[in-house]
Amino acid sequence: MPLSHRVPVDDRDAQLEVNPMYAGIADVGIPRYELPRGELPPSLAAQIVRDELMLDGNARLNLATFVTTWMEPDAAALLAECADKNMVDRDEYPQTAEIERRCVNILARMWNAPEEGGAAVGCSTTGSSEAAMLGGLSLKWRWRAGRGAVGLPTDRPNIVMGANVQVCWDKFCRYFDVEPRLVPLARGRRHLTATEAVHHCDERTIGVVGVLGSTFDGSYEPIAEMARELDALAASGGPDVPIHVDAASGGFVAPFLDPDLHWDFRLARVASINASGHKYGLVYPGVGWIVWRDEAALPRDLVFSVDYLGGSEATFALNFSRPGAPIVAQYYNFLRLGRDGYERVQRATRDVARRIASGIGALGPFELLTHAEHIPVFAFRVRDDVTRYSVYDVSRALRERGWLVPAYPLPPALGDVHVLRVVVRNGFSADLGDQLVTDLRHAVTELERQAAPLSEPDAAFHH
Ligand SMILES: *Cc1c(COP(=O)(O)O)cnc(C)c1O
Image (cartoon, rainbow, N blue to C red; front, side):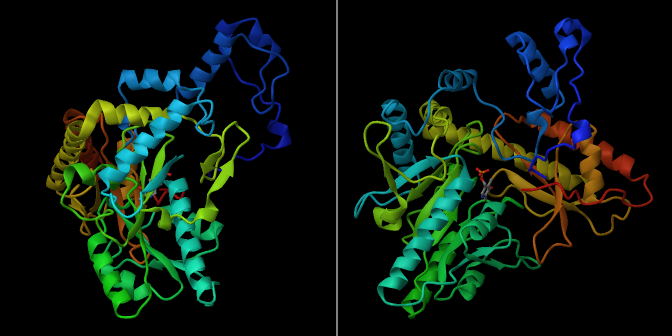
């Protein structure tokens, strides 16, 4: 439950139990859930906060998250130096704005936006979720304008996507009143296929979302095939449906490791692409990107002009103020790594993922659903003939060693398939990977002693 609730009034007076070494100050009492009356010396306040944070997990043993948990010290220093920069304040920080522009240019070229026939446009966001909202809104506005222009009804828009989409797309639909046309999964089909996508489109479809790097198993959806079949649909007099590619992870992997795979603006039907700078873009949390293939793909009335910071600026974003530091760090990575560096890092990461996957596959009780074929992510399940423990038991047993490997059911209609998932990120070495496999082997030996599965699905796990 991500929302924080007010504690009951009886607990309101609960005080922080501080170490008696912090003597003197502790006597005044520090309320836990209320703004303290007095001040504390900075070092003491910082120490108390650090003590609280001690119980947070070790981020690098967290194989659940896609988000960057290690950056070079130079990047960390740059981030600290830029902590005060507000991205929206382009007049105050014109060079940060220029750096954002360079990043958008780099990404537009990395994703093969056409050089002719109108320039690509794009912007940074807080992450892929905000970028998805902007991409979805563009599709909705374009569809409505197109329909309105020829006098057709503009109510009840829908968007076609696999049931495996990340929760940000469910949010988009709910927040912006678009019907989610979720294509159910099926045996042997764990993401959206071209045939299913086309089958679910009608004249009220604002777009198809193709996922490059499915959250549930790391697989790429067949974007080129979707484009081809949607082209055929339009050519046969059917609706002309654009594609938005949710390349949250794959947008920073495919260009380096799968350069011949056509999923990006090389496909004329791809109108926009989002990616998370803070996933395989290799930046700490707080940056995402969206690029539209040309200005026509971004309706003008979604863009606001603001002039109260000095100078007039066009903005398309859900937030106003936003940290500039992660954008600077993204640019640092682009300069520091270049094409070769990104390729080297992503290849090493994917190699480690494949090595762990093979190790797990060889243990015996597990069946791999994916093998890090695409992004450095794979999912596996316990074989049907394993009756003494579940994926949830395995997840819990690994947690005892400090590893965070989530277990969850697949989306409809594969909800009876329960899987574990490993996300390998930069900074996770082959040695650590081997240790994980060893710990998993020991965990399995322990779990064999159980009579039956003990742990249940963890309702608190969200993607
Ligand atoms: C992580 C992810 C998102 C959400 O991205 P954030 O940057 O965390 O907001 C959206 N789609 C996919 C496919 C993802 O993997």
